[in-house]
Amino acid sequence: MALPMVLSMLVNSLYNIIDSFFVAQIGEEAMTALSLVYPVQNFINAVGIGFGVGINAVIELGVRYSVIAFAFTLIIIVGVTFEKLFQAVGNMKTTMISLMCGCITNIVLDPVLIFGYGPFPEMGIEGAALATGIGQALTLALSSLLISALNAILAAYSEVYILILGIYYKLQTFIYLPANGIVQGMRPLIGYNYGAGENKRVSQIYKIVLCMSGIIMVIGTVICLLIPGQLIGLFTHSEATIQTGETALRIIGAGFIVSAVSVTSSGALEGLGKGTPSLLISLCRYVVVIIPTAFLLSRIFGAVGVWNAFWITEAITAIISICVYYKAIAQSRLSQSTVK
Image (tube, rainbow, N blue to C red; front, side, top):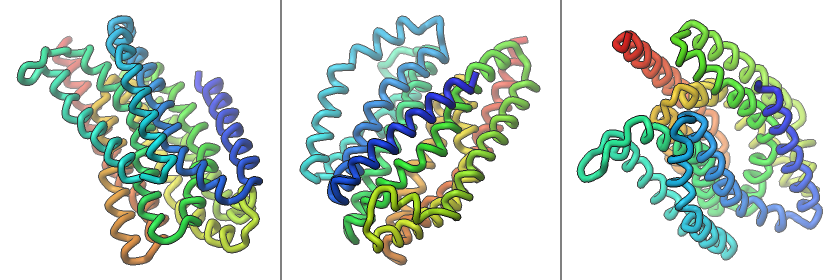
């Protein structure tokens, strides 16, 4: 089930690399512009993927969910258009603020819509589906917020660092997209077995996927340690930029292996219909931990501090992911035993 998704993810990442390679031939300025627009493109994809995952998590309510979700299509397109315009003129702060407002609003409305606080109706499992969709959408949308925030931090030092960050996010698709393909194949398997009360199989599937994701991350780490200069050299011919990029890839690559824990745990929770815990992991990985850490370390170590924030965040988020996942599993088993 995972293989078709892995292949499609690889093709998608290959497209991103080739597209960026030819853009880089125009010049570093063109590649920097591509890096600035990338988070907005990522956000557009997030909306569609979020809707799809929400429908998949609660199939019987898919039609009702779609009607509500797609009713906001025009508003979403208008909002994304303005964000892209702000990006085009270099107004990164406005884009960052707008994305943060959307994230905070979603976080507040999540429990409100599920449990019916105040004047809002209790949506129950329908609200859980909505939470799952929002959680997956934000896993890409939050990355857009993260890139925008990091761009703002790095811009204080040099545009070269923005270029390197953009190159990194193009290269990391070869690592994370195949891993996400495996995770997408895992979701329905975990959902089916959980629904059938096969908790042992759920645990086995989680561990197998964790190992598979870990292997992919090990390969990515080795590549970034052995040939970082050649990878950066695909997008620029500036020797100074290549040397700076080598340092960045080696430092960031230190967090790849441990990131398998949060990626797998988040996907497993979505398969169980636990949108809120999955969103919590995404928030820690893309906002709560990394942005403050990057800001503080940049004030101490300069731009290199931003690169170190990646592996530090992955380590902290991995610990949080394990705790959140097993707590959610324990609650699910308790709920199943109560029903029986």
